[in-house]
Length: 332
Image (cartoon, rainbow, N blue to C red; front, top):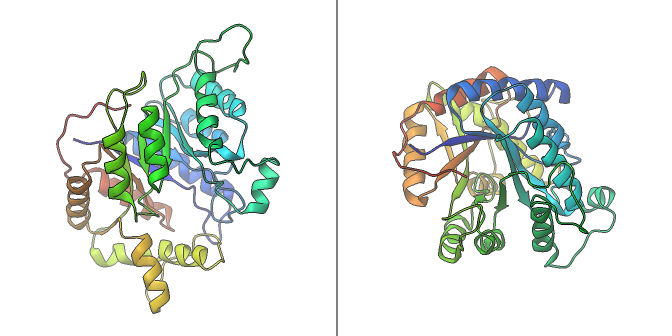
């Protein structure tokens, strides 16, 4: 059966703090390992009051140290914020500490506002070719060291799988050209999902890392014992999305049974959450099966922004045990 993985934004909830969020992430990762999830990724965001994973490599180390088998990685590192050598050293260190368990997903968005971007990396390159060059430079640091060239220590000669992340055709084309696995962010930007997957598969060129195309698709899945309870839990992420899209990002709000959206807000949510499975285990299972059939995705990575930690654990547990398509999958 196709693998399921977890994308965790380490949500800081209203009334909570980053320390609590990171404790909850580790607890979820430990449960996910027992439930059979394949990998556990955290994402780089900066200046966002509701996200605790800004220091992404540090969070990955925290999660990997507290687990033993599950792959842990970045979904992803926003490469324009960093010098490629720094990322090579960080993930070379992680691979040295936790061999065979580290993934490095790369995105080209800054993951923040322009002011914060300048604070992160003061000479941002607006050249459209900068991201591919940075990916190739980063990749070179993981190759065996050649005399006279810059060396990543740790990093050189280590097997750190690189992924390209995206929500548009740009990432699909780059991943295909470089022969890298591709993860599409359909959990929040689904508009070009099918077109991007088709382009990636059509133009894929094999590489030493990957012999055939491999697609991981992001989905939101919020499961509870009943459809009604799941829809109630989902009002937290609905509020977070509306707040973000209307310029008022904040901590993850508690769910509400009295929430009513206007036409403008409903239009935002219908677009952003169009790749979402929300409901009882049967409802979620049916939706995930149909989504997998429609996309032929090799792997699903599941986001679940849920206010209560126990409810979030329960959602991922219910999702882990749903029936899923049987398919021989060679995973990166």
